[in-house]
Amino acid sequence: MSGNLNFIEEIIEKDRAEGKNGGEVYTRFPPEPNGYLHIGHAKSICLNFGLAKKYNGKTNLRFDDTNPTKEDVEYVDSIKEDIKWLGFNWDRELYASDYFEQLYDWAVQLIKEGKAYVDELSQEEASKYRGTPTEPATPSPYRNRPVQENLDLFARMRNGEFPNGSMTLRAKIDLASPNMHLRDPIMYRILHENHHRTGDKWCIYPMYDYAHGQSDSIENITHSICTLEFEVHRPLYNWFIEALKIFAPQQIEFARLNLSYTVMSKRKLLQLVQEKYVTGWDDPRMPTISGYRRRGYTPEAIRLFAEKIGVAKRDNMIDVSLLEWCVREDLNKSAQRVMAVLNPVKVIIDNYPDGQIDELDAVNNPEDEAMGTRKVYFSKEIYIERDDFMENPPKKYFRLSVGAEVRLRYAYLVTCTSVIKDDNGHITEIHCTYDPASKGGNSPDGRKVKGTIHWVSAHDAIDVQVRLFDRLFTVPNPDEAEEGKTFLDYLNPSSLKTVTAKAEPFLANAKQLEHFQFERMGYFNLDPDSDREQLIFNRTVTLKDTWAKQVAMSENN
Image 1 (tube, rainbow, N blue to C red):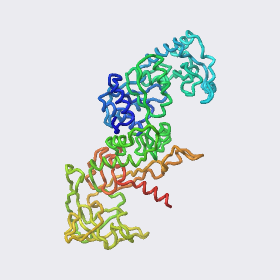
Image 2 (cartoon, rainbow, N blue to C red):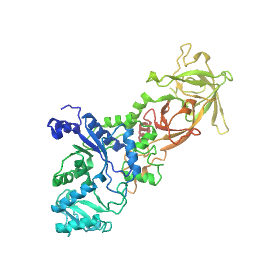
Image 3 (cartoon, one colour):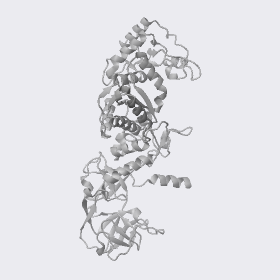
Image 4 (cartoon, one colour):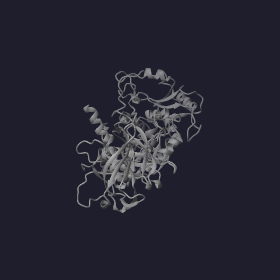
């Protein structure tokens, strides 16, 4: 087989070569609608849909809606939106609740065959009876109820005669198994809760381990692809299939995505939202797909990331820098270039004619000539980045300083002559002269000018709000908290900084989520909170991996 295949593709190729399932490949993506999808789900989406596409198969979207206490239509809608945004379309939209009647009938079948029983142990009692990985479980006193009594009690459970927690239906398997999942696992529990699709029709709900494999079987899923934590569940998955003598999908596990400086536990993400450490599920600092979308990440970049990290059999930590590299790779080709000054200081060009406005041509994207050019306007007063000026520069400093000459992007060569400061020594104005013969930024006499800086004209600059997002956590693995701490202790206090920037007027017509490269500053997009009175731009990613440099500096100090 080709060395370019991942291990799941090798399994599929072998199955197809042997004519298994008629050579068909049918996958599914089965999220529980109890939260928003994150970047780990994106990897699974790309894998399931990608495999089906590669082998001319199909992928179902099936919502695992078996716990009405945590699930909501809001999450269903967001999941569908995220999958479509990533560029995938499902064959059928299905729900585990579609199969509640069939799952119930199969449970009755297992009871009749002596393979399931109604248990009345409390949760605390059941935990004590369960044993340990090295000690067998103690049989429940209800384990050997007569079949007819089990059938009667299970029917009455369905009819709502018993309160929550009073009874469960358990499979009768192997109390001595070293695999704890095979020690009479719970199949059904009583939950008097309204379900987002079935309303009050049901008050007993199947457990994931019971519903999942049977749902796969009903849909004729050929390859049920799960993350590695489900490997230990596979024997139970197979036990139910074999006990019911139904179509047998093949469960295959792969390593879940662990991303540095990130948490992806739904419980922890929900805590961040509910306790208002972030503004919501789509906060641009969140690892949710909706958060990445709002921040300006592209579906192409996320698909590229999934391709780059590949499919592994063992868990490992992926550096978030790789994801950021993928974003830069994509936006470099597609993002419109503009000039914006995030920390402005005014520059006055003393020998530039009063009232004169120069019209200059600026390239929209040097990577794509088809994107053309735009007009930028130059005047006597401009803004530059405060960081692009240094009064007492070190050697090899190629930006602006007193007596130094730099190139203004698309415009002229200018030389600093003086600065004006306030009473606190803060520079308020920089004065320069320009070379009228250097229009376009070219030296007329061939002199070499190494520094090029961006600018905007004070005459027509617009004010925009810019949100500078950084990593949400200060350590690579916030899940591994020191004793006495939680992941919240590693929140980055500098994960969001808001500034008012000066920008060229081209941005006044920006559309929501439209991508831009602010030249020399990074990639940005227009936030949905914007209106014509207040444009808000989110920094998607810097032009370079500045974080790696910061970490190296801190380690050396």
